[in-house]
Amino acid sequence: MLPIVHNPRYNAEFPADHRFPMGKFQRLAEVLMEEGLAGPGTFHVPAEAPASWIALAHDRTYVDQVFSSAVPTAIAREIGFAMTPPVATRARCASAGTLMTARLAMEHGIACNTAGGSHHARFAQGAGFCVFNDVAVAIRVLMADGAIERALVVDCDVHQGDGTAAIFANDPAVFTLSLHAEKNYPVRKVPSSLDVPLFDECDDAAYLEAVRAVVGPAMANFRPDIVFYNAGVDPHRDDRLGRLALSDEGLVERDRFVIDAVREAGIPLAGVLGGGYQRDIDSLARRHATLHRVAWEFV
Image (cartoon, rainbow, N blue to C red):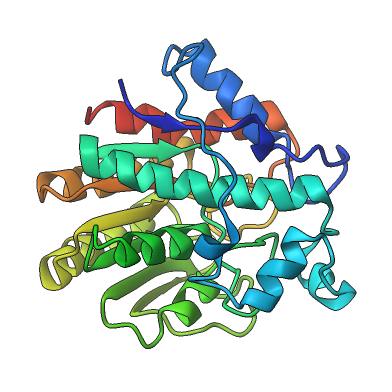
């Protein structure tokens, strides 16, 4: 089976009208079981990440503020929600989940989380619905353990991965690749190793052409030990916070191309969820399940 990482505490129980669709994580797990992609007892369940892991990628003062639910109001405003104990627990579990996903990918070739991709969180604080940068935490822990030397981040969320780019700006052992809507959040982009800004209403054909042009060369030139793939579904034409125009079929082809390119190169792939902001939680969860459906093709 495809190793899938999930913890029920990924869902911090937000109000239904909150801009961040928190309920998608629980519904995604249900969809995966309904579709036979997972079953009772088959999820790999991460514990809460300790502060020592998180502090490898974030300032310890900020880490302690999150752990104690004492984040300053100004930072909580930038994140987009108050720092309650369930939110802090969720961030810790998601970070541990992406690390577990990476370790499973290194064992099995491919694995997917049902959360993760919090790419706006930077060293000193969170932002843009992102508390901790789970991919950065996972990379830092794997490097500290001597499990990897080089990592590639392929970020296909509709928003530029500014936090990830900032954390690894001076680290030649990590290559950050971001394909995103040029005019979308964040206003001030942080240069990735390679940025591919896309025009408003970019459709399947143009988007897939851009992906195909950069993913293969990035792997061939950088030769990573692992690829972290942020499979955000917010490039979809129906997303509330996107500016692109991908169809469901376009998302499938995007995921299939990226995963096939990475696995054909013999490199482990750790898939994380990324963004998606439809109000219809069931439709959104089913769209997020695209990553897991396609990943199953490569088990």
